[in-house]
Amino acid sequence: MRITLPFDNGVGAELVGLDVASGLAADDYAFVREALDAHSVVVLRNQEVEPRAQRAFAAGIGTLRPLVYGRYSLPGYPEVMMVSNIKKDGQDIGISDAGSLWHSDGAYLREPDMYSLLYGVQIPHRGDEPLGDTLFASVCAAYDGLDQETRQRLAGLVGLNSFVWHLEKKARQGTLRRAPLTPEQKANTPDVEHPVVRRHPHTGRACLYVSEAHTCGIVGMPQAQAEELLQRLWTHIASPQFIYRHRWAKGDLVIWDNCAVQHLASFDYGDIPRLMHRTGTFGPRPQIC
Ligand code: OGA
Ligand code: MN
Image (cartoon, rainbow, N blue to C red; front, side, top):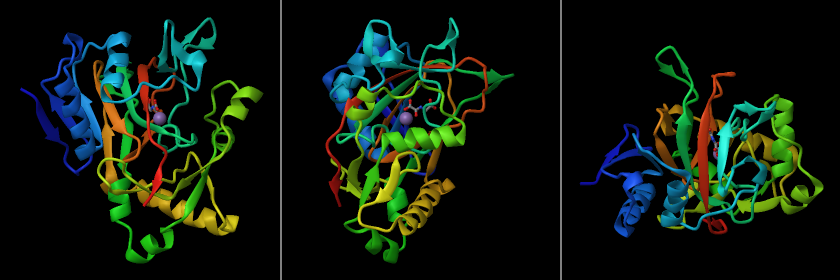
């Protein structure tokens, strides 16, 4: 029997009764998609997820997306990225700086990611305490929590989202740990415009779609004014009432909806090894609300 157990403050739910290793049927995937529409983040615990099965899972709930950063993929699995601080021969085996700023995956792309699936292979601990939590903030709840005047002010605004600016910001923050973009990668990731408030493609809810990681300006607005507005929205999004904090255990598979939530990595584990496998699905072009 499949059960959905919603978390306390309205963001996220645990799904019980699915066993990824035994393979999922079409109606299991429909169940997961419905849970994602209702709760934005879903957690499946105690799973054995081989890379092949994780790829199949992503393809079951959406259209599997190849990676922008090919060099961090799992050997033989171009769609499965390693998120890790582990080094081999002095080199990072995976991406080691993912999520140091609140963000939505792929927001710097014309067609950002819809779902991300992150599987806990190796979770760092200090004593019994797991480290490396991932935080999720509901940007639908955050929009609903804005006052009427701010909502009116945001109507019709378009944000400028930039991968290049993102990497520069991480470098200034001191958290950039990946190879610089090649001219070809730079050319493949031009700045893109997305609505500041986007309509969720399934639920129709209004979602704030500006992030401290990727949104560097607002089209047609003087920069100082845009920065002030963006800063206010980022602070609002990170308010405790919109957040689910996932405390990882090995075998957790966490799936989130990148239109409905933003996420942040906590980076409190230093050199204690952490390894996650990540896959993603294509999303539609964000539509204005
Ligand atoms: C990601 C990401 C956060 C984490 O993989 O997209 O942001 O806690 N990860 O690893
Ligand atoms: Mn991410």
